[in-house]
Amino acid sequence: MNKKLNTALFMIGATVFNLVLLFVLIVVFLAAMVGSFLIYNQVVKWIARKIDMEKYFLPLFKRRPKQGG
Image (cartoon, rainbow, N blue to C red):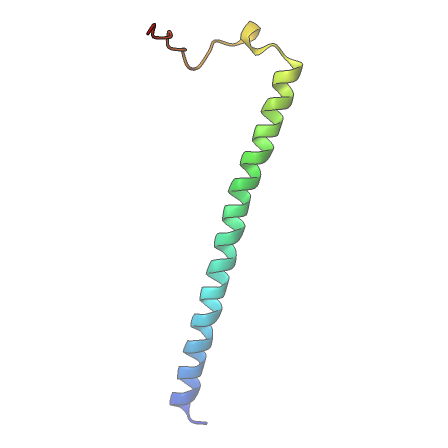
C-alpha cells in the first residue's frame, strides 16, 4: 500500500470512529437528561408526601378562577 491509500483509509476510519463516538455520547446525554428528570420527579413526589408544602412555601403559579358558563 502506498502513502495516499494509507492516508485515505486512516481518514475514513477516523471519520467513522468519530461519528460512532458522537452518536454514543448523544445517547448517553439524552439518557442522563431523562434519568435526571425521572429521579427529580420521584424525589419531589416523595418530599411532597412527607411535607405539607402549602404550609411552608408560596405557590409558584396562581390558579385562575373558574369561568362561570
